[in-house]
Amino acid sequence: MGTRIKPEAGKIESVEDVNFALREIGLAQKELDAIDSEANKQIAEIKTGAAKDGEKLRKKIAETSARIQAFADYNRDDLFTDKKTIELSFGFFGYRKSTKISVRKTTVELLKKLHLDKYVRTKEEPDKDSMAELDDETLTQVDAVRKISDDFFCEAKTEEINRDLLKSAS
Image: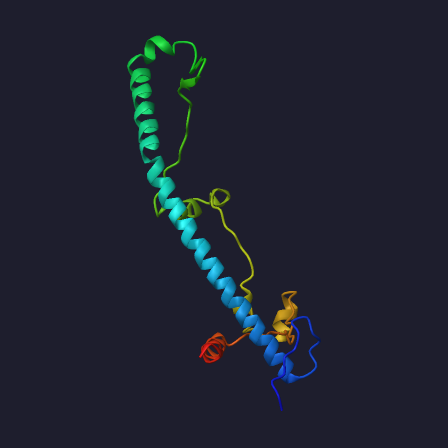
């Protein structure tokens, strides 16, 4: 019996055809992994290069902003008597009212103790993984249901495909 070769778009008619199709999936995944790996390598190199190339400019922006702030701080009483922002032809500078709340680890507990619950952010959601332990009757009581299905899957054995490729190359 000779080697059976099915066209890529061919109809699958046997378990042998499925095995061949899984080989095709594995080869395609291997190529995709190589493409993604190369892309990630190039992206990392580009990001590193951009960070290095932009280092002097970021430093210049920070230093220039600090000099403008020092000027504004020194001349605050003269410049900002009736306004908080000065508009110039190339931009703006000034002061904005900013409020920040600083909290400690004990803040949530103390808010609850003082019945200030509306100031505590809580995200409640069902823990479906844990709920799998519940029996069907209990699930019904909490308006939930267990769904069991046979979900199809296929997975290529990349190690076996690599061995086959090595064998073919020899």
